[in-house]
Length: 205
Image 1 (cartoon, one colour):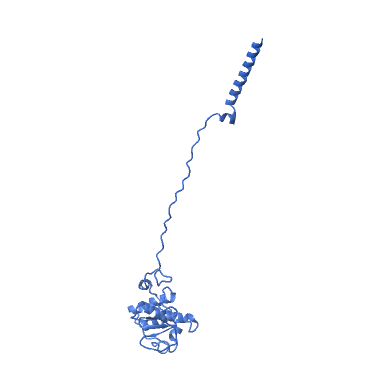
Image 2 (cartoon, helix red, strand yellow):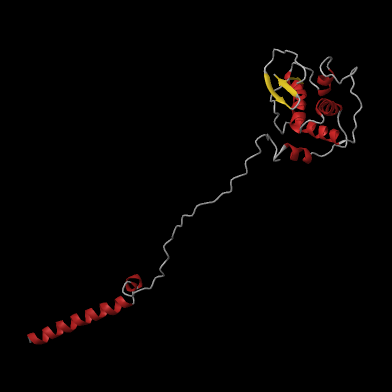
């Protein structure tokens, strides 16, 4: 009698286990835990450090202010010949022409800057013509007028270009801030601060 009961219990237990196994294999998320799933292996990000090479801009010419020209000669050649000139620009170019034609471009520019500096200083007339025509300032002026200019000459073309450069302030003067100058052949004994000698002129502030 006991043997039959033991067999019946064992059979019931086996049936319960079998039912549990069969039920587990078909049940949602729990079932998937029993099945190995292949996952795609994602590559590990790699960071590569490389130097960034940046071009160094070319250094400006030593005397340049707002210009990309390598020399004053280059800058003069870049100036467009104006179709028409204002009276003021004609006075500025005329002063450069009569005072410094035949001198270096640097010498001509230094003379041009004196007229520009005077017009801005508050101590002289505020226009270029006012500065140039002021009595007893420029020896080439005769009765509020300048002599005739050979406008087809290379000297005049250079003077016009230098006048434009001085007016725009795109190249520094060899005598920065100068308000006075005289030819080196004379000695006026001025009590002024001497700045520089450029070609045949001595400049003062």
